[in-house]
Amino acid sequence: MKHKSTDRTKDDASHADSRGRRRFLATTTALAATLAGGLTDLWGDEGREPGAPMRPYGERSPFEKVARKSSRPGPLSGTGSTLTPLESLYGIITPSALHFERHHSGVPTIDPDKHELLIHGLVEKPLVFKMDEIKRFPSVSRIHFLECSGGSAGEYQGDPAPTPQQTAGLFSCSEWTGVPLSMLMREAGVKPSAKWVLAEGGDASRNARSIPMEKVMDDVLVAYGQNGEAVRPEQGYPIRLIVPGWEGNINVKWLQRLHVLDQPAMTRDESADYDDLLANGKSYRFSFVMEAKSIVTRPAGGQHLAGPGAYEITGLAWSGRARVAGVEVSTDGGKNWLKTELQQPVLKNAAVRFRLPWNWDGNEAVIGSRCTDESGYVQPTHEQIIAARGTHARFHYNGIKWWRLQKSGELTYA
Amino acid sequence: MPRRLFFWTLCFVAWASLHAQTNSGGFPFWIQRKRVDPAPKPAGFGRPASAEELKQRDITVLSDGAGLPDGKGTAAQGEAVYRDKCASCHGTNGEGNLPQGPQLVGGIGTLATDNPIRTVGSFWPYATSVWDYIHRAMPQNQPGSLSTDDTYAVTAFLLNRNKIVETSEVMNKESLPKVRMPNRDGFVPDARPDVGKNTRTFGENRNQKSQAR
Image (cartoon, rainbow over all chains, first blue to last red; front, top):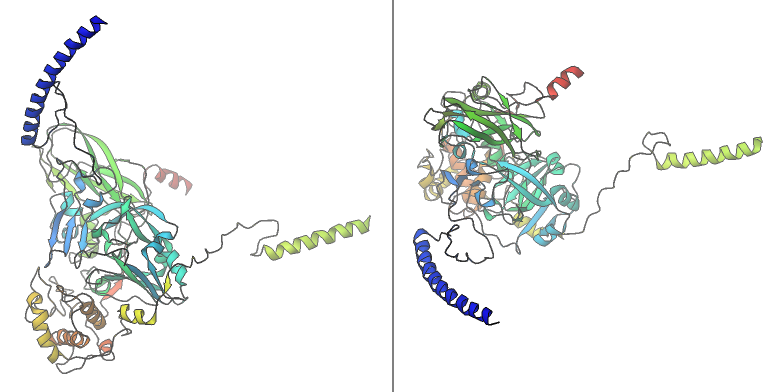
């Protein structure tokens, strides 16, 4: 008993002593930490300060600076586009905050309680849906990529972009949740003469595109969920169309109206913009599908390898026509191709992550990837595309992208 | 026992004919067709759209002119509207001012040359699309602010500067769809895959396929 008490006194004394010292140390550490930007000393043996409190909506680490980058500033701050930093992403899902943007008239602020979706035209009964009604339908979630048809467009004119973000950053992939558009169409009752549906957004420019009825009834989604939460305002809050595998522009954001028609409306975007002009002066009309494409994101332009040794060559592949069947990588500019490992799951109309372990011998290398889809389509070379379409097209570019690795470890476009 | 046999035969025929009726589709009655779920019944969500809100919200304009509203305008009238609302981004005569606004006038006949110039005049196949786009999206700093007459007038102005209509020609819902744009026949259906279609099967499957053939 006595023994114990003595001990305790002794303990208490030393405790008090160490507590004082700890407090002093804590103060100095906190001060140092404040100066150094709130660092936590993981290995200090002089006591550890508890970390930051919890918060209702999380933020990434302050050390993470990865960001979208503006590609073509428009006349107004809300027009133009921003690019996804593909080289800094892992897996296949693009964080919603890094999803590429392409707006024609800024991002509207829409109150979901007031938002309505009108379906009219060649239907039995024109209907207006509120958001809570749209969410009452049976929902589906699917992982789909979106690519602006202007992705890598500069490559047509031989204007190679220096990084994956700058060449292919008009590409992102998310899990989308919503209701199949076919379900809403059945609700309104599509008439037999209906062949197209004009989808209109609620942005200031009322961006509008016509979609063939066959696709509408196949796999188009009216999405309100993106990566587990509500679709982001930049991505079409509160609802947007997801038209799997088809050019980004037709995936109308801020969806407010669906006009069922017997013909395409020939809006500016479909009749006079996203049409690839060929060398003979004619233009492709209704180029909807985004064809098989892939890009090595690491090691890639704008990066630096520390020296010879083991690296992983990785990147993303996708196809809007059929599931990705395989991706090959070449480190000698296309003389030899090596089969890569595909990360599961490999889903239709979704991004696919490919990987290849590689030992860099320190010599110059030219690194690129080639995607093949299950339709048998092989991602073409730049030269093949130019031979087929000339250099005046501005959309749907999917050529093989090469990165040149110098002996110094610097990587640039090839 | 022929009578008993006759009885059972009759029973069998009756049973079979019943199935033939309920199991139509060209299959022998003993093969059950795969049951197809009937189309889901409407859930009854959504409210009927009123004629008034349809009139207000439906701004669709088709290339045959369907959807164009009453109203009219000429290039002469459109010049002032263009100068006030459009010229700051598209230039005094539609020559363009990138990145503010693209060129709208000229370039006709250049599409097959080494330096194609895509404008309303040289590239757009339908005059109705010009009206629709101005009505939807222009001017970019205040879409929807032009009156119907002003929209017809600015459309007429752009067509006139492209030498497609006369200065005094009235553009309205009857005349606009009849305007024939120079590049009306300049489009072909998407011919892709135009490259990369050298059909192959990836990896091991290739050998299996070729053996099968």
